[in-house]
Image 1 (cartoon, rainbow, N blue to C red):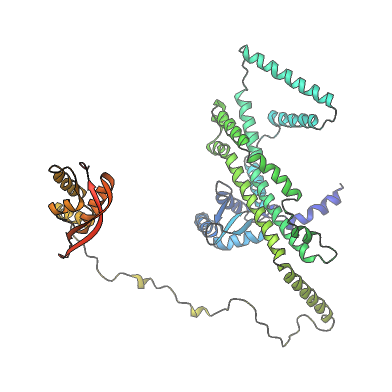
Image 2: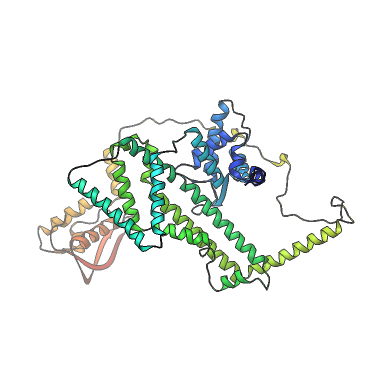
Length: 483
């Protein structure tokens, strides 16, 4: 490609690509610092109100150190969303909206992190990884069975040789420096996955919009998309992106793969060389497979939601209304072009059009907050603490709880004289001191530590108001001492 062709290819990215736009922004260091702090760590999605609160706190600290930041967090977030740095979506588990980093912002943050903390890219581990993958690709794509067998036999010979060396006690572990180098190379590749997931989701959103636009724009001679949706074909899952992601997701969600991956991580982090990793890197490795599963499940939910929405959009005939609206807009634009030859666009007209917008009102109609309205005018009365009356506490406890200790003693006292007794027998010998609460307590004790028969009996007690009361209940009998 010539320099001229490359220039024309890159010029649209200056204004159209969010990554480039963020890197050349006036406050790029501040924007990257705020967004990476709150949305590039463990929490990659926050409620809008929570993000506003966190950024406002950081803005106050930045202003105290001389940075000129006149707007509020809400205003800045609105600007960043329009610039393509943030993605705003409705919250799924609460009312409101959430913010997350757009793919372009993730790319810019990763690029600046590499500038601030450059990593050695020309390493033995990276070259070895490339060579291994290239060799395996050559074997897997070789149509000649003889050559593939030769490669497999050679691999088997090398493995047998390693087994023999280990059996003879020749254990040659990898040097700690080289091991740490390989771990960091793995981390560098793994850290690219959040950006990849964001791009995948953005691609599915773009695919969903494209399919809806094709449905609206298609006519009687171009019904391929409509016919496939009516036949139940999941166009999003069957797309190239959908099939590619399906293969990746199947591998991530495979229990055997996940268990083996976790075991490998545990063994690696137990090695001596893993002490060179900082806590964030160790935490990233431990959560890696669960993070992949979470992101994979989220993309699956997006694909399902888009597929259902597309099917509902077609089967409900909503696309017909959009087609009518499209024709009306085209007709209006055509008439406008025709009218522009005779009337200037800025010429006044007598047409009065009511717009669906919030009505503006005077600032004088606002009622200002008066702090004095919340001032407490009544003086605070201080009460001196007094010793607690134990007897009063006992009376309070008996008024709010059943005295099971008293009831247990009453039952056991009667059972000391007779073999068995019922709730009515106990109440005759020991009247209910707590009213109906004592009756309920005796029934509870008998239900758990006695027997209940189909016979009935009448129990009597005196209520707290002093009136005599009675009730017919099933016979609850005590046959032994209660605890």
